[in-house]
Length: 126
Picture 1 (cartoon, rainbow, N blue to C red):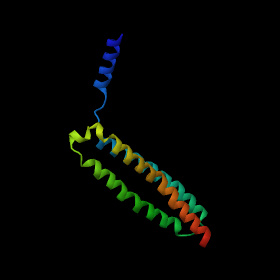
Picture 2: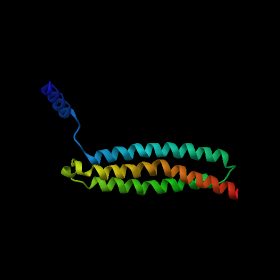
Picture 3: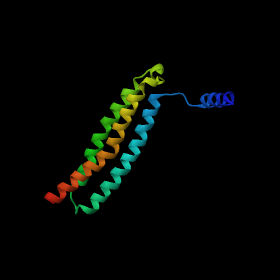
Picture 4: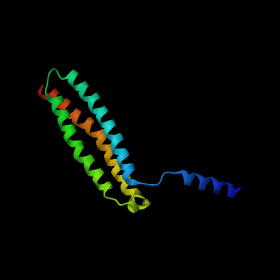
């Protein structure tokens, strides 16, 4: 019975994609940017409809775009520097997990925080 499980495990490992931290981070950045853009459009469009003609939502768009591009470039560069051996090294798992958490915190949190800030400012000074 144990040999059958070993054959299944070997067969699954044979077809498993090789570990590549560079590609995984690149994929996470791409998906995070999609989520970020969707949130940005949804939140900013809501702020545009509720702002009564204020320029603050447009300023929020500029701030959000200017903030995310350097952050994503930093993550991408850090992982693109790895050579082929490092890219497949399981020892990088904790670093990948840390960067992935920060990436998603920025992608989701930044649009929420900045749009909330600008809505608050619009209420206070609008």
